[in-house]
Image (cartoon, rainbow, N blue to C red; front, side, top):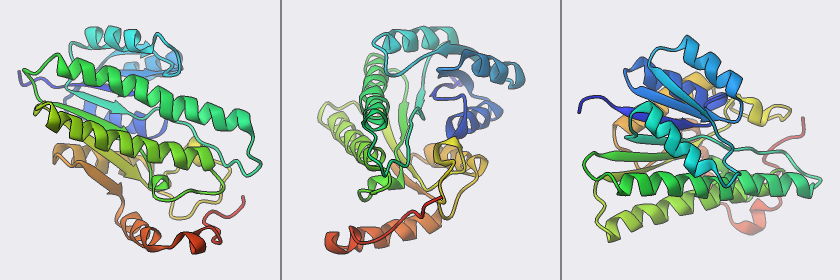
Length: 248
């Protein structure tokens, strides 16, 4: 009963990769998933306690079945961590990019988080945590990244609804964590002149600490908590006239 099992969705790069390494180093038994099998296997070979991999594309209908297979190979799931997302600076409003973002960040997230929720619902004998990366981009509509900021708002609202659903259905063993990082120095923001970029290793450490403390919402880091506070105060008429992200 003391063994803890974590599934990391989106573990081939960025925050997901670093959270997988951090949890494994703390003794969690970890299963990792993503679209690039070779990178998953490389991480498994390098990191003790990463015991299983599964190639999963969250936009495909078979993704929940593949998640179940990964849970079986890992030995169970006490934590589901969802870090599978894409985003673009898209001032030209390229519809292929916009729809791909919606398909991954909204539909794919819903598909996988729903599958994890149903797994936890069926296993009330152990406490469970469902943690998902949203973003500070959820705070306001970002003109350079319309679909990205909109899907991150969707993600936060969905997690809040699930938390309320747990209360309504008295699923007290399930906890929800909405993780809202600032701009993290990963491939997701490459090519953009984003301010206050954070190192993924530091972000992962703060995420793991927040989950251990049972936080329901966490904005990383303190500078972004301050920034978001003022963003929320900004009236719409002023916000739409502001340039938040400079061109590369």
